[in-house]
Amino acid sequence: MDEPYRVLLVDREWAHHTLVASMIHRRFPEVALYSASSVVQALDRLSNTRFDLVLVEAGLEAGARAPLAQAAGDAAAPVEVFEMAPSGRTTAVPPRVTEVTQLVEQHLKG
Image 1 (cartoon, rainbow, N blue to C red):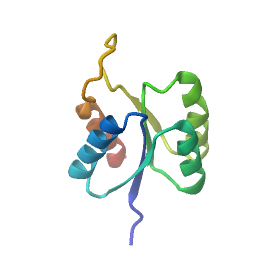
Image 2 (image 1 turned 180 degrees about the horizontal axis):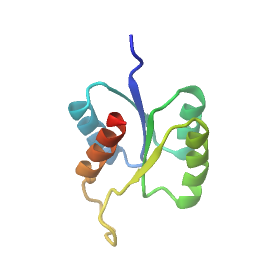
Image 3 (image 1 turned 180 degrees about the vertical axis):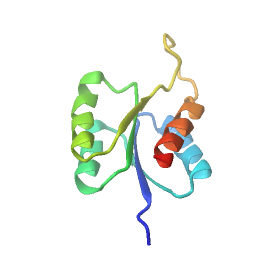
């Protein structure tokens, strides 16, 4: 039996995370989706599980993303950063689910 395609979703906002996770499950039922609500939690998951893709919400501070990118790179997992809100907006808006779908689809195809 083949290993599932594993995606780690790193996002601090639970409502946004739920929406993105739901969309990924509907569109890509073959994907095993894991969650992390912080960089520390993501680093722990990366040290224990092999991932095929790491999706990181751009709202995480760049300094916090650096160790995550290093750990994922060491594990040969590509890291993709996605925006939750259009640039310059400060209010919470639904994530750009099309962007996330395209990122997952790109990596699934190889």
